[in-house]
Length: 525
Ligand code: SF4
Image (cartoon, rainbow, N blue to C red; front, side, top):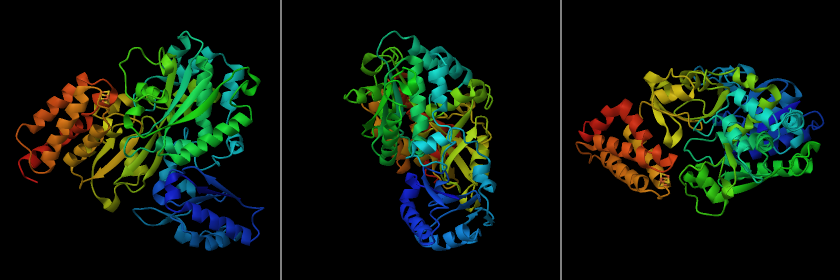
């Protein structure tokens, strides 16, 4: 038997380390260590229920565990093969226990492609990754494919950047491949900074080799020999596991010189960022790696032509890279077989806020947002009414209940005033004040503005002042129009994406909840 115990940051925070230690001790006390392997995995995805574990092949899922539950769990489940009902997953609406993992709606409606290894491998063991097909895609790309073949498959796959902008990945690689120059770079953006987002951290913690594979294949496509993973230092577990993965890959000839005997050389290092949100912007990220202040610069020139140290560079985020090896292995057409006309494959969301099942969710593109919130997320606690879902973090927008049938698709989500973003989805129930929500996100943006350009630096400050006044009951007639005017000016004149999207949370809140702003100003609430 295998016992997969979640060892992501969320479960560590709720006590999974102590649970695992007790579990191992109880197994040893009964002399079962030869028959039961305990595997500490990365994030399982069902973060609300940690500490949690899955018993395989029994397919039984246990939740909200404490160290003191382990004697009974080991005795009943591992010795006698009987389920411990009080520790099983319970449907939040009916409170009935659901004995088998595959029957839990949270998992049953998902399609784990990017997260294919989550909860199933020890992320600190390259053997576990290889046992699940790791590095097969890399071997195929390096030994059987030309750089042009790799780019072609990426273009066929239709994969678009999962960091938020949705730029076609194959096209980005093609630009860099065609850029002249003997020195090029591949960068991984792991500077996940949106409030409510934890997709990239979870992928790095659960399956770091998938990301390394994506970088190696990207490097082969553009003929780069050096890469950096830019990861925020607030992610210490991710940094540790990625560092271990790099060292293990080097030791097995999967990084460094002559990878897999292909004659191709590529190596990766981690660069830890200090947590500035703006360093997720590609040009600011590159300046930061260069040891300079992380500030955006105008484009063009685009990084594919002049990026890190003025050399051709491609930057992809964690989730994008984690898909690449499977695309090489199965073909671009396989990836493109799922999704909508313009948004292919799957998308990972971090579901949080006023929703029963907080956690990591991966669904095919084209899935209605309502399915994510109700069928996978289990709906709103206490059967309250949904008010809106904030999608795309501080650069995104809110989607009200009336628009919840919008499907996961870059263009369709933009039509309702939000953006896909990196995948943070914060659910808000009917008690949420949308003016206060807009103020919260604008405060975040204002705080994170790097100050380089006046419209963003000063404009967001003025918008925040207006919102603070409205929230404090000091709103004035004309404030709403002024907010709209300022947002439009900042969008048109700010230098980088942070400023250009700064007004989005306010504008989308005004689009659907204008009456709340007016009620505050007129002292009706
Ligand atoms: Fe800095 Fe804002 Fe200008 Fe971007 S838009 S460069 S974050 S001041």
